[in-house]
Image (cartoon, rainbow, N blue to C red; front, side, top):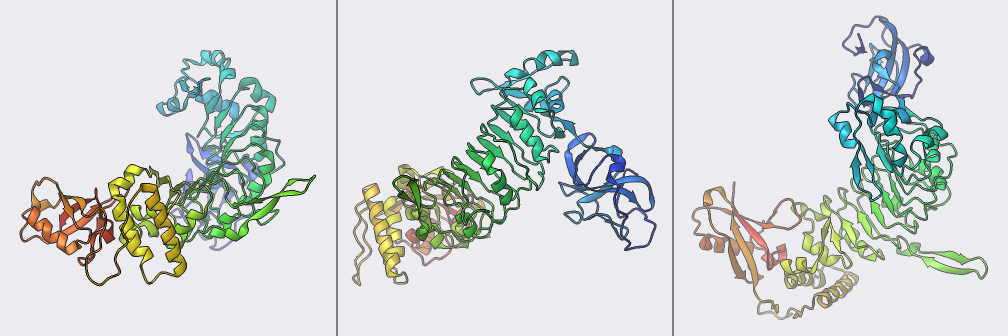
Length: 561
């Protein structure tokens, strides 16, 4: 048998612990990274080397990265190792595992003849004009000839080749001295010493991608990586404490990507706030496990930070720390200080697919000094089906927004939604609502004035008298009605001018008349730009303007059931 599972018969008493492993017997060590022979994408970590009771010879217990094993490290009641998942571990014969190849061997293999289509797609260099230029090698006798041109390489990819070690710095530099971009995704690298050797050998290296390499917890003192501008450590098992340890080696870092590292805390070792990283512009913390906004506030004094990516975490609430401003010494000579504002240069904040569900979080975004690009998609607060805000209300509430959920917020967008209708909605809901506090009402009045000035809208304040309809300078709103019901037949869309106070129930009656629909119970939906699903107009007694219908809105006419 080449691989063991719980289904195989095992001799020996249940519950007895396995003997201590003898890793050196087969040339493998605990925590070593390996892949299966013939499949460098099937990667795992050695957790046990030794005998398995009831089977002859040496076995290797592997915890597989993809979770596709046979057990949790326990077999026949005997615990040999503890795997991450219930079925992520298995026992494999040593002959079926590879401990990897060196960096230069990887380069030779990737840029050789007889490559697969997948390898060919990844075989390129960057020309001096930064364009991808394919490399074609024919026959092994051409390798040395082509290697002579490796000195011209500016970028290379040796992803998923099983690279586990490096040659000496001098050997690497002699082959590829001018590399500026290097992709090492999905290899077997784990030692920071190897990363230091690579960077020392490649003085021009600006972009280094180590995604899907499980790095050691211990970080030795690294050489100063003065050229590195972009470092990608996605799914590398990195903690923030490790980030703190190697930050001094990255004096010119501009982008740091830490996706999918199971991070839940930002733990600066020297103070309450993350320090250093004076040149860092982009920090990517997507697909982690951060729940508390207090952890993110620890990043608020990264002075050059322009983009903060927090998609797919577990954040429920966000805020701006108005009371956290701090002085910073400008000059030792005359003791001059300047006040540093939190997130003072942050322009882009990506918060998609979190758990944000309160209006206070939305309104707090206005307090960030330079924030213009925001992603809020897939949060409860922006899901209309769960009582969240439609896009046009978000745009109206966010004063400085220029990009929302990846789409530009342009003047034409406001026109398409009918700005006057939006303002009417805001005026009714946020300014004259008796439930809001005096402070909230005052803030809404200020925002309302900003919107009027921005779009040049003349707006007549609704009368507080008893009789008479609310009056807007725009009067009627122009709405497109489109039949989509299966039994309605093919009907041309109609554009009609309606009073903003028309109720949903009244609009259903009008649709029956406009399209000559009989004996059909109607459902109406708003086809909203930027939303994957139409918004159901549920309450027959609610005015359509209160649900976001304005000039340019398309209302879909469907049938129940």
